[in-house]
Length: 239
Image (tube, rainbow, N blue to C red):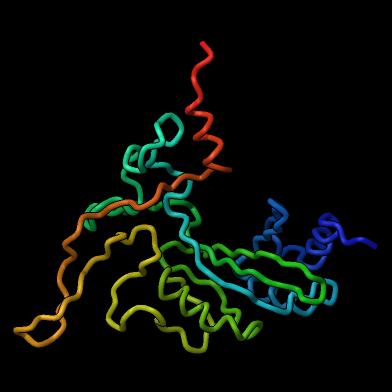
């Protein structure tokens, strides 16, 4: 019997039941959303159920949805001569530290995304869990289910500030011990807060306020494919 996406989705719904908040299929990839209180139990079901068999965790990362869907670039009725032509707004990433976004932002701001693989069934699955609290995002740790998640969760905690409840050794892994903030959050300035240099007179490394201007490196636009929209905008009018 051929395993179709429909039959696979039905098995997911049957096994996860009320743990499954939503299921979405796009571009041949399946994404399911799990409630935070059921995160670790759902992962255990996906791993141990013989009809699913997702025995391998490939990747775990955080997502900050602050500013998601907002567009600070004009991208449909401009020429193709350089990114700077399109800068319009001042969304997350284009501000100084004092004027950084301070609003509540989206209703659900932080999420953890995990990619699983079933070697037995030659299938992949993306699972996502939104933290319930934007001010202190907490999600259960998956280390007991997938031990390889240990360093992935430490990286996510370091860069996004997402706390993994039950993690055996949750501490920073990439930034310095005295680092303030979480650099992958959308309200963290792209140029950072401080810069480091060696002071020959003091004979030590010193930290100083960053001296370069905030900037946006690439456009933040949510759309299907920018190439076709750009080409359509440059077509001559039929009038």
